[in-house]
Image (cartoon, rainbow, N blue to C red; front, side, top):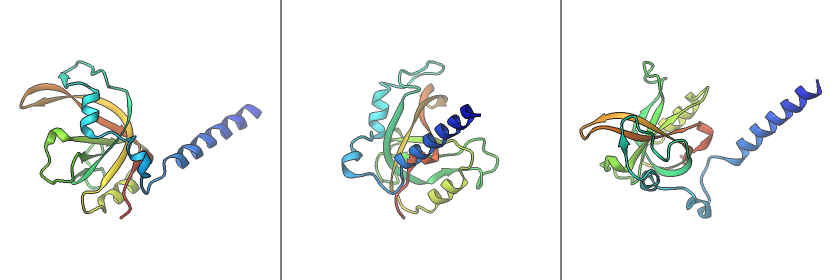
Length: 163
């Protein structure tokens, strides 16, 4: 019985400390530099690869920052046929951004609806801070089949701006 209670206490502390360590509401000025730009994430991976070839950066955890693209928010409550939930961040707040300066953030978790409802209320392009894992995905583009990047993150590791 003591093993179970020690295990339960350990899990509780991990969840509590994790939740306290990553609070929404903004990143202090001195910590903003710890977050990479989208271009820096792409540089970390050197270059896009051929379909099926694993990129050197896949599986790495990164902290990145970018501007929310409010027209590219996709989640099951609004689009029930989707088997994923994602949004796009860009390197600049410009609505006509260069597609190479953007990245998709795939959101994982049990109950993502509150997160996406809050995200949907952000009407203008605001800076978002994300901690997540780099994933590779095979895509067929106008340049032929390529291995592209995306980020997988949990809502508690995504800091949204105050509205």
